[in-house]
Image 1 (tube, rainbow, N blue to C red):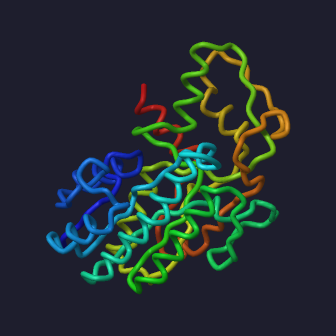
Image 2 (tube, rainbow, N blue to C red):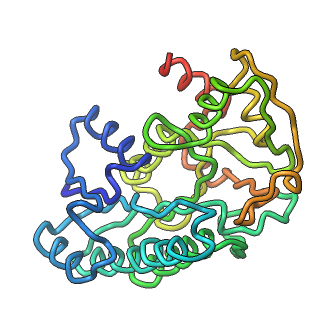
Length: 280
């Protein structure tokens, strides 16, 4: 199978490349240096030349606060909407299956219940809006697609909350973290494994939710990350820690569809322990 990966040098793309390398699966890696997904002509030419059968679309603009205005807002729209539309159209033109990574931010976060895959998105920040528009583009141009929504992603490659906490703990003996935003942490390894699982197991096309089992607040997550560090972590409210972009207060993705597929989901505590052990 001819496989291509967009955003192959990013946090998730790099994890996916490592997983495929371990399995000795051939693929083409692309990133902004060799494929500008915002350039429709360039994308079409690349697809026409390589004729991929499977596209893992990991490329994304993920600076959530910067996406609210100015140059960041423009980049968010260009990469996450136009870029995704270009890739979806090109994938359709060569009959490729596409795996698109979306986010819990497509939901408003006001529900006290877990969000089902069929629930109506209602994003409240620019990043969530753009990723939802990306979902719509995938659904518009393709029949053979998987949309995988995920949340609170961390892993070995790139910037993420775990690295931020570990770095801050080196220079501070006291930290404050919000305790009124709840979600599900996701290890990039678990996400990459599910991305390949949907293909290997020929799961029904459509939308899936993927995160590790269990829920927590950012404060709970930080406390677990720093459990063995000499630092005090104190809870604060979102009002005490204002951010430019709205953050969902209760964005729990329902995982029942993924569980029903037979994919085994370890808890976030288990995978965090494994990840921290690997860092040491």
